[in-house]
Length: 302
Image 1 (cartoon, rainbow, N blue to C red):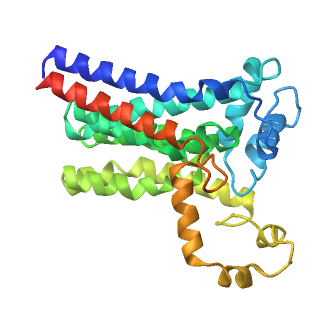
Image 2 (image 1 turned 45 degrees about the horizontal axis):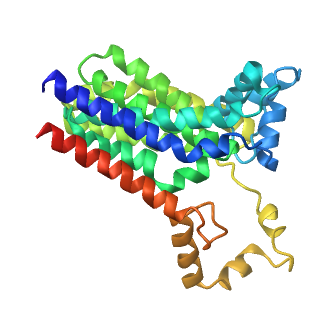
């Protein structure tokens, strides 16, 4: 592929990233004072002598996410006390970086340096559910685990040829798990991708470091949580129902059609109060704009 084609694809990625930023510019000026966001921010203030204990030795709501907690400490150390907008800006930077990393991951695994890698960018940056993550600072853990998980995938491709890359892949996946525990699902993904792309000995050896480091992260998580699973306390769910009925009884009385309809409306626009979808036109316009970027870049390369 010529340098011109690579430049066109790279310009398309940058344009897609810019389009993904635009919908959130009006949100950056809003103060992130949701109740769970307040906990992350106030407990992570660097002038709080207990911030280190909060990061490493404390349960973070339903789980143990020390990297996420540390990211709030870094924000507070920078300008958080003087300008709370930094928390949303950090989320936005992580979101945009995820789109760029998705493109690099696509290139690394497929060898395709053309415009079709922008489809991966579209999935990450254009999906309307991202609105519910980027604009809520308490959900930064998803952005951290996405970015670091993509770094792990990129490094793992190099580990199949050069074992030294295995450590980098392992560290990235370890950090992803410390950001959000669900990143552990990438471990079998690394193994399957390796077995599909290299001899089994190389594929398995490339997974040694990631498996060991993820195991260490899970052991640390179990020690803090006092068990392997974590999650919400059932009493918390019961407190949401004024009738005081047990959760199992309430679930039996829920209409499955209503659940499906609400889920679809939430998918179309997470910001709407389940169905009003005030931001749906903007979400659709953003998806259309990103799709046009893909089509234009592909046409220029033909």
